[in-house]
Amino acid sequence: MQPASIDDTVRQLEAHGYFASRELATALFLALKLERPLFVEGEPGVGKTELAKAAAQWLGTPLLRLQCYEGLDTASALYEWDYPRQIMALRLAEATGNATGEAPTNDTLYRDEFLLKRPLLQALLPDPQQPDGRRVLLIDEIDRADEPFEAFLLELLSDFQVSIPEYGTVRAARPPLVVITSNRTREVHDALKRRCLYQWLGYPDRARELTIVAARAPETSADLQRRAVDFVHRLRTMDLFKAPGIAETIDWCRALAALSVAELDPQSVQDTLGVLLKYQDDLAQLDAQRIAECLAVAD
Image (cartoon, rainbow, N blue to C red; front, side, top):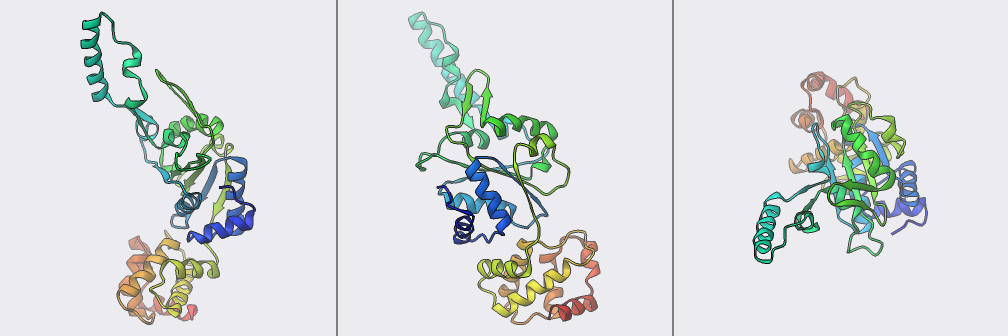
């Protein structure tokens, strides 16, 4: 499904619970239109991964997700051979060959049925449920992977193809929508970024975050949502090691609703502060007096 315009992209994402800025919707529209990967960088918890999920729901195809980590290799990301089944096939071929006088060949071992397809390889294969076969691939937190893995991705992102020894080259009939995310824990190489469209995703403004919270935490009252969002925006102006993202705002509102908190006060904030802040040094900054000041400013 190809979006008709940027406005259509905004509407389609909103229909699947994702409230994108026009800049981000433009980047996604161009990624689909130009069939280019989209590199989305930003702080943790601002909606990078959720963008890929919403796009997959919109396009009607399962999301293929590759979670990056240090030491990620092709066996986990691309493919590996099913060795036990290959050995069984080899023994069967040898037994059959002994009876017929024919020796086993490479075709005996390196067939599609023995190829275990990981997310990168699956993304190049058409989705049988889709009229155009397009897939959606999320390469999540590329900054956590090693630099050699970035180099490995270059062929995939340039030509949407990969070469597998003994099997051949697999080329996508329709390039997938590739969303690559980074929390910027390290700089990603320019060679990778040049192959992508780039978008920085920051914290949303108050109005957009309130819209997101209302959609994702409807069990919280409108007044509590407003005060919670205002409080979180106040926290983001402080010198914290890790400011709370949108995900933490949503979790906090859900936590307040679960505790039947009807009004935001210093005690309820103190009791639930661990939902928003994840580091002891940040928690230590928010004593009772500081919390009261933030609530007063939020009001």
